Amino acid sequence: MITFVALKQNSKLETRKLTIGVLFLLFPFLFSSCRLFYPNLLFKTDKFYQFTPPDTTVNTSEYVLKAGDIIEVQILSNNGYQLVDVIGQALYYSPVIYSIRNEGFSILPLLDSVYLAGYTISGAENLLSQRYSFYFVNPYVKIRVTNRRCTVFSGQGAGTPVQLDNENMSLIEVLGLAGGVPDSKTYKIKLIRGDLRNPQVYLIDLSTIEGMRKANLTVEANDIIYLEPAMSFNDINNQILPFISLFTTAALVITTIRGFKQ
Image (cartoon, rainbow, N blue to C red; front, side):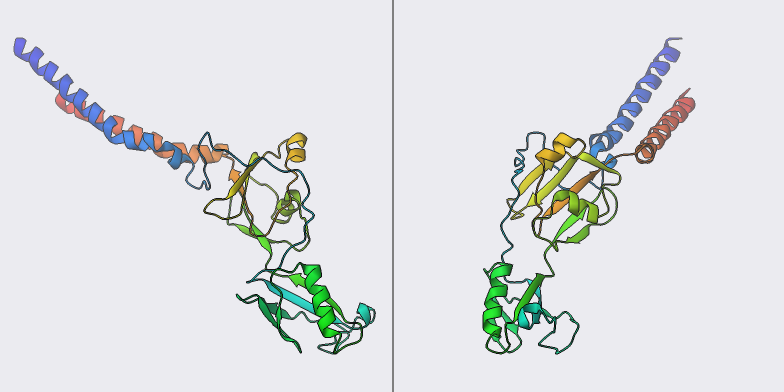
């Protein structure tokens, strides 16, 4: 009788050790559950991160040309009244693309090298109008920067580059061009600006009118807008199922071993 009781106690002890061992193996999965539940999160910040306060003042400053910009230059005669492309001598305009090199110069027809870096768009237009006045009567120059854009990462799918064709485009406009805010947390939008080694990060709440008013930000070139994905019921279910399967398998193993021990 004493031997039977001792064997039963040893069996319980071994089962308990086995259970602890299985739970110990499962512990790392539980500890990293946040990453497993949200594997596609980007730009995470800690609880006490100091975000940059949104500035509701509309930025009225004009874009300044810099090295690396790709510009589209249109040159028309007679102050643009006749709408004749003086370079192509046509009644229609075929866009011609030029680049501003690392030194700040751009190679343009008839003018050769022209230093454009540091000029605003209107300033560069006036400069080229003066230069081309030696060749044409009252030239009219129009410049458009074709690679001035921001990037929007939505809750689902790949990032979307948005061309900033107009000055002072608002965050609402950019989100509209990027396809809206599907499956995203509208109360937790991050706008990242400046040097990525030490960026300014704005936390924006567009779920309310008050939040929209406070976050009337003007989007600038090279801004990154991140829409944190919202977890739907199906997403949560798909993330939980592997854990349920894991625990079920562990329970089955423990139950089977107990059966052999008895």
